[in-house]
Picture (cartoon, one colour):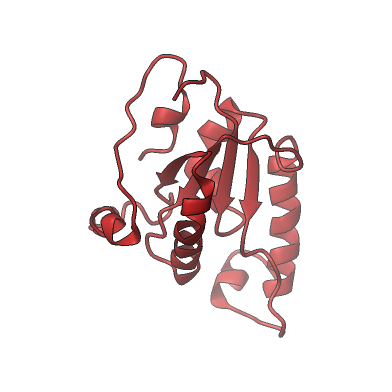
Length: 162
């Protein structure tokens, strides 16, 4: 990278993925922008065990509370972007994550003006074999991956790794 302070645009499958996976990076780059893909409440009333265990009345309550939480966490970054660096989730496990990864792969050829990085989703990166399987699959997605190496002045290089 030629810049010492990249301007980041991070694609987050859900409200928590960018913060959990790249929170340290977001702290180091307060001008970063985060695009959350799946953040709408379900069309129907939905009660899940996860919502109950997390203290939410239902899925609508969960989305409402998590949107407020996400806006607070990202209020410094979400409304402005002059990005030159894209970070996309690797789509390691959850179907929504895979869909976001595939969508990013589809538009990558049109984003040649950006430096692109993939990040391992915090919740899934410790599942045995998922990171290795995705890395092995990258060439089939048209991606030639090069591991980022830490260097002076480039906080992005190491901030999104496990």
